[in-house]
Image 1: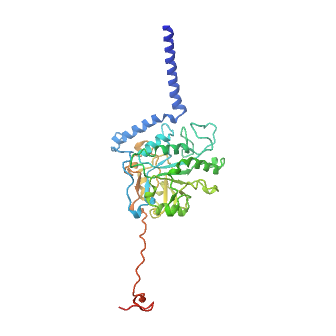
Image 2: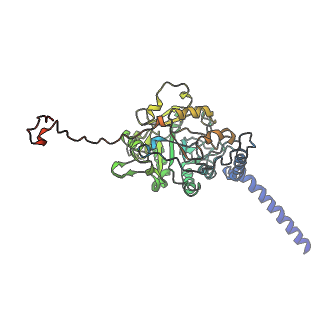
Image 3: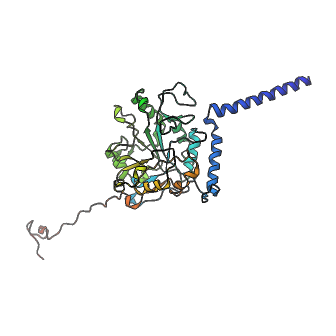
Length: 397
C-alpha cells in the first residue's frame, strides 16, 4: 500500500509539473498577449530607471504620472482649438522586444501618464494563418504594428472592439480629479491599396461603427442651441473648435476620422465623427518633418483649424527638437509612440506637457473670441428730432 501511495504521489507531481510547463509555454508562445504581466514588469522597471535617474537622465520622480488637469484658459480663449492634448500613437501596442498588443496594460499606463488622446491606425489583411484569439479575423478592422514597408511586425493584433472595451474599463485609473479631461480617438484609414481592392469598404466602416457603439453614453453629440456636434461638416467642426466652451468636452469622448465617409450613403461613420480630416476642412494633416524650416504660416492658420503632425516613422520616437518645432508652429496633435519605445527616448518629450493631459498652445497661436459689438448711442447732433426738430436737421450747440 505504501508503495502504491508513493507511486501515486510521484506520478501526480510529475503530472502537475507537466501541466505547469505546458501552461507556461502555451501562455507565452501561443496566446502571446497573455504575457502582459511580464511586459508590465519590464515597463515598470524602465519607469523606475527614469524616475530615479539611473537611466542616465536627470531624475524625474513623477515621470509618466499625471498630477494636474490641463491649465485654465481665460473665457475668451477657453476653446478646444487652443490646446494640444498629449497623444499616443498606435493604441494598445507595447513595442519591442515582445512586439505584442495588450489594450488593458497599455491603457492603464497611458491614463496614469495623462495620455487621453490616441491614434488608432486601422488596417486589415487577408490571411488564413491569422485567426482569433491571437489575431482579428481577415477583412475585419485590426490594430496591428507595421513597418514603413507596410509589413506586419507585431506578433498579435487586436480588434477595435477590444481597445474600446479596455478604454471604457480603464478611463478612470488616473484618479479622482484627473479623469475628467476629454478623451480623443483618431480613427485612421491605413488600409493598403491591395487590401482595399479586396474588401467591401462600406461594410468595413460599418464594422468600425459597431465597435464604437459602446461609447454612446460618453460621446459629445449635441450642444445646446448650437445643435448637432457630429457629421464633420466644415460648419460643425468650426463650431466645435471655436464656439463650444472647453468645459463642455469634460468627461466626453471626441472622435476624429479620415475614412472616406461619403462612400456610405447611410452616413454610418459620419454619425459618430465629430471631426473629419480634409484639406478643405478645419481638420488637417501635415508631416512632422515637413515643419522644419517651413514658410507656411501655420501659427495663424492653427487659430481656427486643427492640425495633426504625423512623423514619417511613427513607431520611432521623434527628436525633442522636432516636437518643440511642431508646438511652436501651432500643432494640436503630435502622435508619440510612448509605450512602443524605451522610456528613455520619450522622457524629455513627455516632460514638455508638465504632468498634464494637455498643454496650452503658445499665446500667439491661440484663437481669441472677439468682444461683442455694442451698438453706439444715437447722437443728438445727427438726429435733431430728439430735440423736437424735424428729422435730419442738425442740432447746433
